[in-house]
Amino acid sequence: MAAVMRTGFCSLMFLVFTSSQSLFERQLTVQLNPGSTSPPPGGDLLHVRALGDNDTLHYLFCSQGAPTLLLIHTNSSSSTLQVDWPQFLARNTSGSLRVEPESSILYSTAVVFSRLLEYDDVNDTADPTSDLFPPYELQNFTWSRLNLTGAAARLCGAVTNTSSGVLCLQLSVFESDGRGQTWPRLIHTANSSQLEVWIDGLLPRAARSRFLLELQAVGGAYPLSRVEVHRSIDDEYMPSIFKASHWVSAANGSSDVQSFVQWKPVAYRRSDPVLEDAMPCRHSDPQPQSAETTAAASGLIQAFYSEPDTFGLNVSFGLAGEPFYNSTKFLSWTVLVGVGSPPVDSFSPLVVAIMAVGLGTPVILLLLGGLWVCVRKKAADSTTAYEPIN
Ligand SMILES: *[C@@H]1O[C@H](CO)[C@@H](O)[C@H](O)[C@H]1NC(C)=O
Ligand SMILES: *[C@@H]1O[C@H](CO)[C@@H](O)[C@H](O)[C@H]1NC(C)=O
Ligand SMILES: *[C@@H]1O[C@H](CO)[C@@H](O)[C@H](O)[C@H]1NC(C)=O
Ligand SMILES: *[C@@H]1O[C@H](CO)[C@@H](O)[C@H](O)[C@H]1NC(C)=O
Ligand SMILES: *[C@@H]1O[C@H](CO)[C@@H](O)[C@H](O)[C@H]1NC(C)=O
Ligand SMILES: *[C@@H]1O[C@H](CO)[C@@H](O)[C@H](O)[C@H]1NC(C)=O
Ligand SMILES: *[C@@H]1O[C@H](CO)[C@@H](O)[C@H](O)[C@H]1NC(C)=O
Ligand SMILES: *[C@@H]1O[C@H](CO)[C@@H](O)[C@H](O)[C@H]1NC(C)=O
Ligand SMILES: *[C@@H]1O[C@H](CO)[C@@H](O)[C@H](O)[C@H]1NC(C)=O
Ligand SMILES: *[C@@H]1O[C@H](CO)[C@@H](O)[C@H](O)[C@H]1NC(C)=O
Ligand SMILES: *[C@@H]1O[C@H](CO)[C@@H](O)[C@H](O)[C@H]1NC(C)=O
Image 1 (cartoon, rainbow, N blue to C red):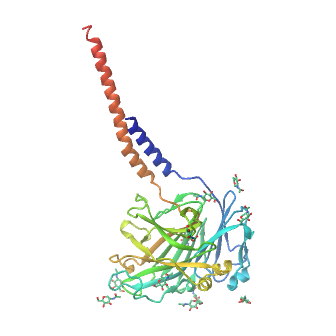
Image 2: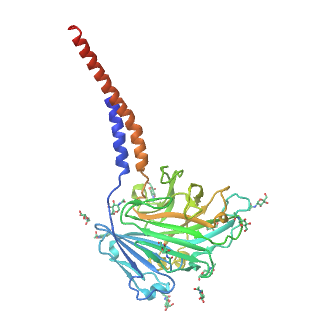
Image 3: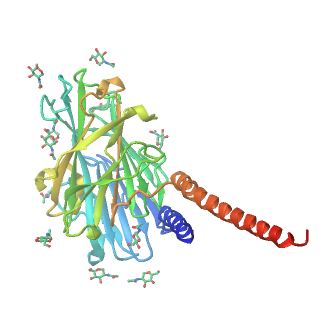
């Protein structure tokens, strides 16, 4: 009895404990085109400073060329960003964007959204290597100015400034733990940012078109060279998705992960999706990429890195049998980019409550049952005790 109670109680405490989250916070400061007197031609540069107790995360998001997010972690609470604008805009030298003092930099990671690929899936096999159309080079898109809302920024681009379809990215930087408002409702921490990518209204080049997105990850000492697929929890936040992919550096031991790109293998066919609008996606193995090509594609990479160590992969949307792109002409996918270990799912409060009820009810019943037996026994004892008097 006591053992059962203890087990139930311990499971309960374990659940409550694992579902609670830390209270680490960062102070965010948002700056658009820091140090520039006028909006720079060719695209904006966003700087979000996320100040911790004695470290700083510098998030840089830029559309000079292919959209790029650069994350620099320093061990100082007073590190600063320096941009030499004429050099930065010339896009032919490294060192035009720096974080000082340089000795405070622990490491850096960047993600470049380099290309959007489209293929004609005539036989509905979802084989992304056949019947490819010429790729959309995102560096050649016409990008809007950044639309800022707090510590979030939206960037939309199109093939030309007159085409109707757009590819948009929405960056959100967080000051504390939480969970995304929209599916896939990724868990985030104060050490991570979220990027949602979507295409809306882009005209497909075939009735049975499917899409791929090519990403390049640039690292300092430890490039992101492998993807680990982890199990994740199925709950009301993320129904029927059991996996999370973590693109991490190959530095030995998973506890040593310095930075990551994390996603769930799911995309959505509508901007306000229901469960049926979810679509599985797959990724290819990270491949080493040409440093020159990446630097040429992204102004931010060119400006910060002298020797960008780059790995790239493709994410393909939709499996055989899934509806084609032109069923909705919309596609959205979300990643988390951050430092330290990727956040892992914990049980949601609803699941905890259900499990608590599931585990708690038998315990209460046992307790009540035990009490009832005791009371009955006592009553019986009392009855016998009084019998002789009768
Ligand atoms: C970092 O900050 C914490 C609390 O503010 C302090 O206790 C700790 O000594 C600091 N560490 C370093 C290396 O400065
Ligand atoms: C970079 O480009 C600018 C103008 O386009 C030019 O003046 C400068 O010499 C170039 N620098 C290098 C290192 O090529
Ligand atoms: C930050 O780290 C660098 C290199 O690891 C070290 O030289 C520097 O002293 C550190 N700075 C602080 C403020 O801890
Ligand atoms: C599609 O199927 C047809 C007939 O089976 C075949 O001839 C064709 O090569 C296939 N196309 C692709 C891209 O697999
Ligand atoms: C994209 O722009 C680059 C640099 O301006 C150019 O070399 C390349 O040919 C363009 N690609 C396409 C597909 O237009
Ligand atoms: C700016 O972004 C907000 C959401 O972040 C959106 O509601 C608004 O329509 C956007 N404005 C423009 C001009 O795109
Ligand atoms: C589109 O770009 C062309 C030149 O590149 C320019 O003349 C035209 O005004 C632009 N249109 C809009 C709506 O911005
Ligand atoms: C975020 O980074 C800070 C400083 O490196 C660390 O103390 C904290 O534990 C991290 N939080 C998470 C959730 O990883
Ligand atoms: C997809 O596009 C083709 C023509 O390109 C059209 O015939 C077909 O009806 C479209 N399908 C949907 C579901 O809109
Ligand atoms: C990882 O550790 C193994 C042995 O423990 C070693 O052979 C390998 O070179 C290490 N890899 C890296 C990237 O440090
Ligand atoms: C993405 O797919 C395209 C088409 O198959 C291929 O040319 C390209 O090399 C792939 N990119 C990466 C990084 O694997």
